[in-house]
Length: 355
Image (cartoon, rainbow, N blue to C red):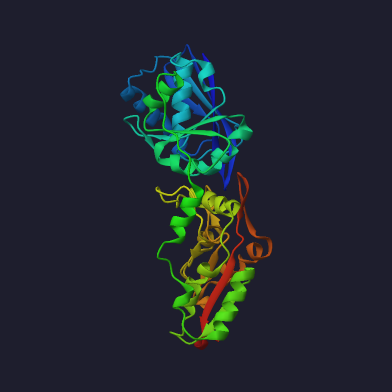
């Protein structure tokens, strides 16, 4: 029997539709997975098999083939566990095919069948409607992240059994709607570095205020202990507040990078990133086998602070040309071209002795 469910793969910071197809047929008993899979996706067959058994479902002694389409798109991440398990159950006849129509699924399975948090949920859910989905099921630990989106129903589940019961119509799953105004107010009341702590130096304060108001780049030159770093860390406190669109952009990047706090579904304050001068080029700009956002992207709509500017490697600084000019950075890999947003305010500091 054939089945198909909808999920997504993260390519850079963009979600791309992936169809998880399962087929149970006669033949030598085995589980085969195809579709240009990264190692963590290929390993999911062991997690899924064990999770199904510990949830009370025994896979038949038949040939089971799993295909993640499109086949020319590299799939990475652990969020394919849940859609693979559901597609197998549907192909086994445990679920009605109509129960998964228009339903988006993502989640990592532990061996006992419980669902674990995954990266990039807010980006996946923002694209789910364009995939033809009206209902989304995610791990409950990701529910607060998905609750900030409107126009689509998002449900949180703690285990595979809860998902199966929901698809059968035997259980209701938890849903919630985030109060964005309350989130913004709570985050603004945090004890963050305040520009009011800076005393004196009227010329420096005026230069910082003009730079922050217009997102202009700023270079601070002065002796050690004159307050360069102190000023830089307080720049976000005088920058214009984020719009909802900007907050969603920041949250999407941090979610894909795996740096979104579990108790927060939306980041409304402007980020401040201060990488050490020994930072590698790939860590600054993003990269890796499965490219992830670097420091320039994590500083999107905020401040990137480079302390001890002359200590940075020249080739590392050269990579800042593209994001400073275009507001994004492109990374080429064999699997394709990845583009990461990187529209930030650059603030750099150097000591007088370095001139």
